[in-house]
Image (spheres, rainbow, N blue to C red):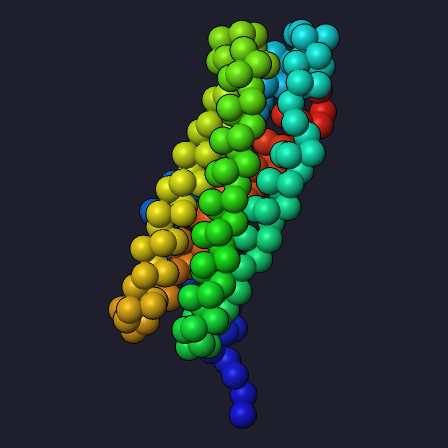
Length: 195
């Protein structure tokens, strides 16, 4: 017996998974973060010593742990979509729960990092490096929180009434979550490793 339910058969660029509007929003968000990262690199080239010294004050091991958390949560998000497409709703819900847990762990670790920075006296206007640090990581954290809410809603519907969830809704949540992963994978090396 051939199982074709999980195969991806998207051939229409006008109707991508999650819908065209979602992908326009994702493109806009990636552009916004790209411009922010570009600004960070530009000002870093103008003040290399300041940026290098400021970067040393960041908690790179904690940011690395957060990177791993997001990558693992992205794996579970993909598993949730896979299981849902195969009508394995219980594993889909569990995978979604692991994804949400990853988002919450990321949030807790990031909040810990923020508290340490604030207690050490590092604020948004201290220098250009920390201005970019707070803006980029803060805006990203807002996206993570929005993603967690979206996934909690989807998870509840899957748990209560799986037939009430359209696969395109789950794909939209997955696309948003993977956008958050991608944005962090762009922020992390530039902010925590390069300068």
